[in-house]
Each structure stands twice: as structure tokens, then as C-alpha cells.
Image (cartoon, rainbow, N blue to C red):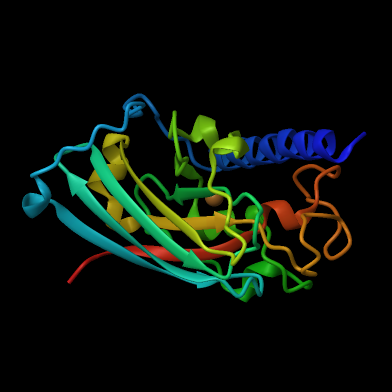
Length: 229
Ligand SMILES: [Cu+2]
């Protein structure tokens, strides 16, 4: 396979692994997505900013990613959320899946090292008991439902300096809108050995899919969403 095909195959596998993660988490917590919707054309309701409820999240590094950032969310009406994310220190030129994770009722948290077992690496699965299943896929275009957890070609790619700047307004399920302050934001993908790609050398295989590097799926940042003071 040439490099491009490998990348494509990896993308597919990453998608599959994320899908598996969703399936696993769904088996933990049943979530109704009936109200899920997406704002494909990205229309932004200007002029309503004054009335919106504001939230923020401080994104802290997980898995020695060295990444750090913040998110600002503004609820517009009952369903729309304007989301801004600014993160530095992510693996450059690699895609970073990012989601709003949460439980239907319980408060979500970011996992601590205790979740990692013996290896000091917190895998996506090991983090699920802390942050819950994927509720919103923070894609750059198209669908934003948990179905797009696998849409690796629609997640932001960090620039050469490892920065991700993200901004999008979309509709979220009613539960997410109502309980936004109980959710967390997670960004995925850590190049543990800094060799410029997601591969098997540093951390071996993903437990979600043994043909996929752990580097591609592990959480890189996590931040609890709180009302902005
Ligand atoms: Cu996630």
C-alpha cells in the first residue's frame, strides 16, 4: 500500500474504533438521540448573543499530550450551541477527533491517572466511566451526532504548530442543551513518541481494534464544561 492508501485505511479503522467506543458506551448508558439534529448549512443566528447562556471549559492535557486549551460555548435558544475551541500543543498535522461526552443525568468528569490501570495511559474506553458516551461530534462540517464519531475526515487537523482553532454553531439534542454544564469536551489523538504519525511503536494496539494504534484514539485533552461567571 502506498502512504496515501495507508492513511485512508487508518482513517477508516480509526472511525471503526470510535464507533466501537460509541457502541461500548451505549451499552453502559442508553441514550436517546431522537432530538439530535445538525445544522448543515451552519447558519448563525447573529444578534442573539446578548441573551445566550455562556459556558467555558479549560482543556487540560491527558496522556502527556502537552496540549492545553479552552472552549467557549454559548447556548442560543433551546437547541443551538455556538462552540469555540482553541487548543495548542496537539500532535501537528494529524486529525483530532473531538466530542462532547456526557451522561444523560450524571455529572461528567475528566479521568484521572487512576483510570489508566498499570500503564499510565488512559485509553478512550478507560475514560468512559468518567466522561460518559459521545453525545456530540464536534465536526467541522455536516452531521454532529454521535454517528459522526467515526467521521475522521470531518474533524480538525492540527496545524504545523499543533494548534486547533474550531468554531461552529449547531443544534444539539435537548438533553445536551439542558445539561450542557454537566458535560465534558474531549479531544483525541496523541503522538506519544513524536514521530509525526499515529503508529504502533509507542503504545501498541488500541484495545478497541487491535489493527489500530492506541495513539490515534487516546484522549489528548479533557475539560469540564462550566457556566461562565
Ligand atoms: Cu471523544
